[in-house]
Image 1: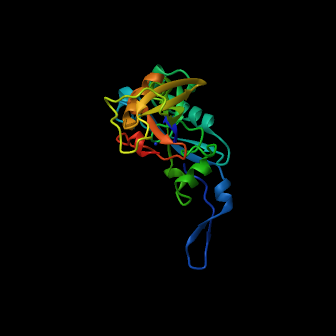
Image 2: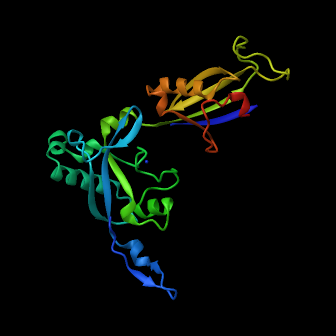
Image 3: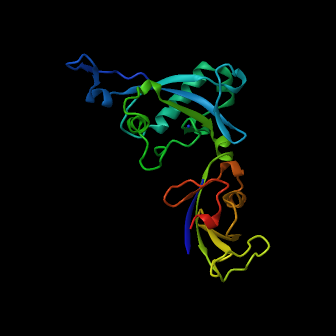
Length: 250
């Protein structure tokens, strides 16, 4: 009985041209969608595995929010946004300028700390317009928020993507002490899980009543990450809870 899994190691002020409708309400024009926009970008960091913005009051940490742009809404402008934000922070914060030398020391991330290259769902390449529409087509561009995060801090907390597949097999060693027999004679007692990470394959055997948290902990050791950076999900995208069990997912 197969059990495929995927492991996910895996948050401006635009020139608006408005037309009045017959009932007096305003509509966003097509030109408004295409006009260059300004964005607000903050400075954030990971702390205890969680991404948080750095307040403007945290002067020693060089925090705050800057207004940068204008940017084209339709292309992938991640590098432009990151560079503009770095330059603005350097101009406004002496401590920031002293500590950081180049925008290449940073990664552009969403408010949850995920790197900005694709949209949050991973289905399309990032653009300001696509991101706005992904959140809410009616959302104003000046309400969007992105952040720069120091690359070293980001890499230490980066969510890696590791694919894995598992198959139930009676030929594998039986772990009777941790996986008692069930009512069905042919129900296997162990699950063979194959982890694929950066072209390397790892294999481990788990009891079929093992909790997902055990797989998360094991996967975290493979890539040298904290278990807090590990999220397991099925190939269909269903995120698994730590207290789920392998035997209940088939």
